Amino acid sequence: MKNFISVNDIGPWRDAVREALEIKADRFAHQHLGRNRTLLMIFFNSSLRTRLSTQKAAMNLGMNVMVLDVNQGAWKLETERGVIMDGDKAEHLLEAIPVMGSYCDMIGVRSFAGLTDRDADYEERVIQQFIRYSGRPVFSMEAATRHPLQSFADLITIEEHKPVERPKVVLTWAPHPKALPQAVANSFSEWMNVTDYDFVITHPHGYELDPSFVGNARVEYDQRKAFEGAHFIYAKNWSAYRSPNYGKVLSTDRSWTVDTEKMNLTDNAYFMHCLPVRRGMIVTDEVIESPRSLVIPEAANREISAQTVMKRILESL
Ligand code: CP
Image (cartoon, rainbow, N blue to C red; front, top):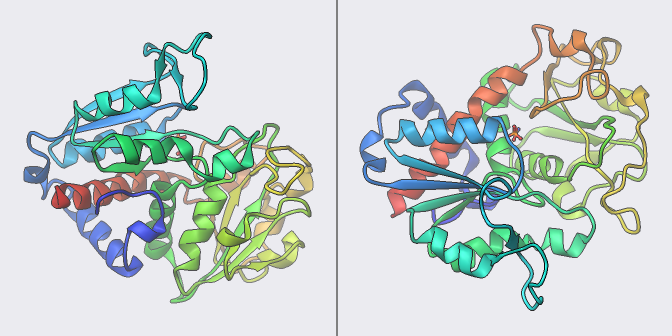
């Protein structure tokens, strides 16, 4: 594996899950692969799970790890080419990236969508520049339009818990006070679409995702109908994708909050969310604290998805 930015980079999904579960059963088995190798993790945005799980996974593989928070302690970076740099940004990404690449063997990048310019976000300009100019394998720790390490962990978690071979999986929009990227929802859809699951997306009118991510999913605007017979409920907020409302919050309607009454419409479904989650907005305390909540095992599997991806990159060096 050279780079990891989407489901297209993982190959056959069943093989990937099998490899991940083997790693989970013996997570220190490949320490030799990372000896004298260095991972550089670059954060343009905040993180708890991605930061800790990816660092732990790298240590499991015997790697050295460096972490750079671009907005805390580094020079402010200009990302656009052709600008006169007479503001507060002291360094251009086009110098910074190859310099960073010279200190490491692979790079993980977290860089969220700006949510103002849809074309710029969906071109994935930041991570694509790392791929082009770093000279190193690059993996996404959440980019503008996708969060593939999260989706891979979600898939592993579903495979570990599914009660039937082809479960019904429902991605539901839920309210949030701030504008959030579409990345987790896009990515989850993309990964569910490569499986043979019964995959349904439910959201209010106006929250339609990019059709290329929706793929073969069924879109159901009635959340209660979507929940009927579900085995997994995956809740997430996202801002509007469609023009002219790109990046906007169109609704904070709490009738979309996942609660026990709605979970009772399902086939004893598990509740999933990538975290961090806003209780009382996305989900009630009762649902997230219930025995059917998978939010902690799902977060724990972030270590496994990251380790599987980095193992494959190390094997290709
Ligand atoms: N799910 C996730 O990526 O969490 P963090 O933003 O805390 O890394």
